[in-house]
Every structure is written in structure tokens, then in C-alpha cells.
Length: 244
Image (tube, rainbow, N blue to C red; front, side, top):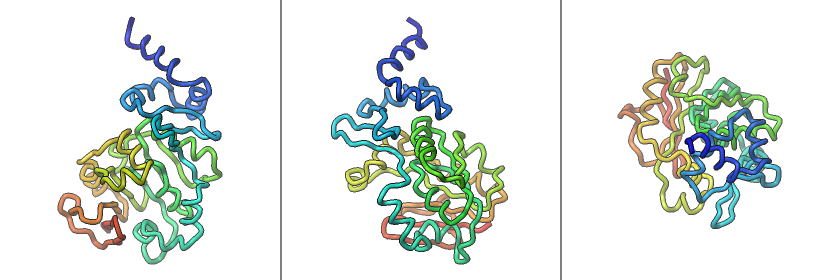
């Protein structure tokens, strides 16, 4: 039996018709998700409460994109301008701008930034993460986030956005892995990419963007040892800001 025939069988066995239909409506080929799910057998893709969701088979926990969650409502309704990412990206003037989000993930930062009236061009190259995020966006009325299934590294130096936002995946701590199910999914599905910040930053510096913002663990060093123009520092993370 040929490889593509085996993959088709795996697709039929592991994905329900509802899931396959949802993935196709998102503009994706269900076959593209099979290798990722095969490498992460702890998770099962299903439709849960009308949402495309990853179910953790052992603890029965569902992970999905929901921009109507209590957490995001609290962040968006209470002191939006106090959000560190808003302070870093928009600066003191808090004027809406255009932002290239190189590492969209679950889209929370993109969503918060979009509430300022800014236009967000969000990139997510991983097919499974793209599917979850696209499904979440389709269930909202957000029209200021444009999601692209492309590798930001190949697009970044030609962007016409004024701000480039980089939030690469860092190794999970025991505390974050235990308390943040979404972070665990990102670690398992995407994994730690140690040179992503460096590669994106180098390409970003070749762009016409006015500002580059990099989210970093609070105690980590500067990317390529380059000191930022300014910083916004929180309890567990900081935003290094590079004016161009």
C-alpha cells in the first residue's frame, strides 16, 4: 500500500466527517493535519460546542480559540490601554496603526491589538494552529485581523506595516506548562524554535517598518545582543522595542 493511501485511511479513521468538513470550509486540506496529529496522539480534533477544538484524551480538556471568553472580555473591557502589548506597540500616543504579527498562535495578542482600531496582518504557518485560529475568527465579527497561512520569515522584510510584532515560542517552565493548557498545546504542536526570534529580527531590520517589538521572558538576554530603544516590563515577560 502506498503512503498516500495509508494517509487517506488514517484521515478517515481519525477525523470525523464534521471535522473534515469544517477544515475544508477553512480552506485547508484535512490531509495536511494528519502528520501533526499523528505526532501528538494525546490530542484528538473534534467539534466541541460548535468550535473546532483539540481534546486532550487523558484529562478531557478542550482547547480552542474563543474571542468571547471571560478572560479576553476582561482584558478588552478593563483598561485596554494598560495592556503591556498595547503600550509597547502603540506607544504613548496610542494611535491606531498597522501591525504585522509574525507568530499569531491562539491570536490573543492580535485580538487585543485589533481593539485599538489597528489593522493586524497575522501569520500562522502551522496548519493545525491556523485551523484553530481561523475557526475562531470565523465565529466573530472581527474584520481588522487578516490571517495568512504563510511563513512570516519569508514575508517580513517586504511588509508595509508600520509595526512588526514578534512573540516566538520559548521553552515552557513547569509552572506555565501546568497552569496554561494553551501554552502546552503550543509547545507540543509547534515546539521551541530557538533561533526564531533571531531570524525574524534580522529580517525585520531590513523592512521599512518604523518599530519592531519583541516579547521576551523577563530574564532572557537581548536578541542578537542588541539593546532595545526602550522596554515595557511586566512580571513574567517584557517587550523590547526597537525604533527604526
